[in-house]
Image (cartoon, each protein chain N blue to C red):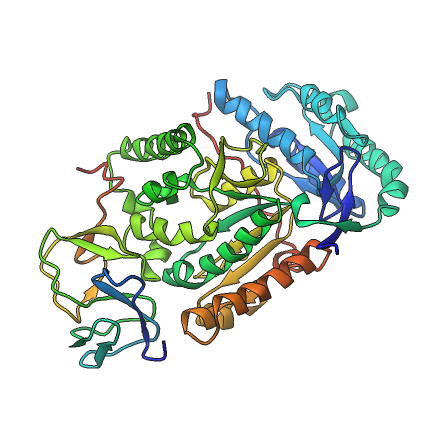
Length: 386
Length: 93
C-alpha cells in the first residue's frame, strides 16, 4: 500500500508539490524574479536579501541554500535570475543543479539589457516548460521517500504540552518507516541539549551537537545581554514560557523518541535515514528555509500564539494545542490538537489524525498557508555585510 | 485533566494551568496529594508553584531545571519572569 502520491523526479527523488521555482540570486534580482513568476502558471519566486557583500562561510552558506532550494524534490524546474555582478556565482548554481535535473536555466539581467527584457526572457523560458510541467502525474510513494522538517513558531506553553508531542508521534512513525526527519533550531536546544546528546547513536555525533549548541549560546552571550530579551520572545512570555530552558524542553517533544543518526549544518542535506539534527537559528522562517534547502518536502509546524507563515515550495502544516488560537486564528490553522492538553483525546487518537492529514497533504491537499498564499522565506546570515 | 492543570513530571515543583484561574481558587494536585489556594490570578498556560521554592532554587518542569527562582515562591504563586530567571544565555552577567 502506498502512503501517498507524489511526483517522481529525474534524480529519483519524490516531490509532494510540482513548483516551477524562480530563484533570485541577489536582492537586486528580486523584483524581476517576482514579476516573471507572476506571469506563468505554477511558478513561484524565491526572494531574499542575501547574495552580495558576503564573504567566506557566510557566502558559501547562501550559495548552498540557493542550490538546495533548486534541488528540492518539490521543484519541477528552476529559473535562476541573476543581476550579473553579484557575489553569488549564479553560473555555479546553474551547473550544480543541471548535474541531476533537466529543467534549469539562467537569466542575467545585465546581459538581457534590463528589467523588461529580462522579464520577457524569463517568461519565454518558463512558457517552454509548461507542456512538460502540466504532464507531471502523481505516482504511489512511501513514507521512506520523505524528508520532514519539524518547526515551531509563536510558541506558548501548549506547544510543549500538546502540539509538539503530537508532531513527535508522526515524526517517530516517519522514522520507523525509513524516512528522514529534521529537528532544527539550535537556540531552542539550549537547556535540553543533554537529553538530545543522550539520544545520539555515537559519541562523535553527541559531541558535534553539544558544540553547535555551545556556539549558539556563546554568540548570544557575546551581545552582553540576557538572551531573554528575545528568547523566549515577548509573545512566548505572554503565552506562559518563562525561560529558554522551558521553551527548549517543550521544543524537544517535536522529535519524538527516535535515536539521532546524523547532525548537519544549515541547508546541508542529510545522508542517513532517521532523525537528523540541523544547526539553524531559532528564527522560524530562517530555520524552515534551511530545512527545505536540505531537502525537506513537507514541514510540520506547531504554534501556540498562531502564525500565518508558509513557504514558497513546500506545504507547511500548522498545528496548535491552544484552543483560543484554534478559534481566533482558525483560517491559519490546519489541526487543533488542544484535546490532548485538555485530556479529552489520547496521543494515539490525535497523532493518527495528524498522520492522516499529513498523508493527504503529501498527496496534494492544500494547507492553510498555501490557500492563503503565504510564501515567506529567509536565509540566515553568519557574518556582517561587507 | 478536567481539574484544569497539568503536572508533567512527578518531580516538578510547578503545574501548568489549562484554564484561566482567579485568586483564592483551590487546586488539588491529585497525583501528589497536594492542595493549595491560588495567591494570584493566573492565565491559561501559565505556571503555579505547588511546593515552596526557596530563593535560588531550581524551578522544575518536564522533570528538568527550567531556571532559578529569584525569591521565595509559595505554593499557589504564579511562577514567571517576575520571580524566575534563566540560567542560560546570560550575556548580561
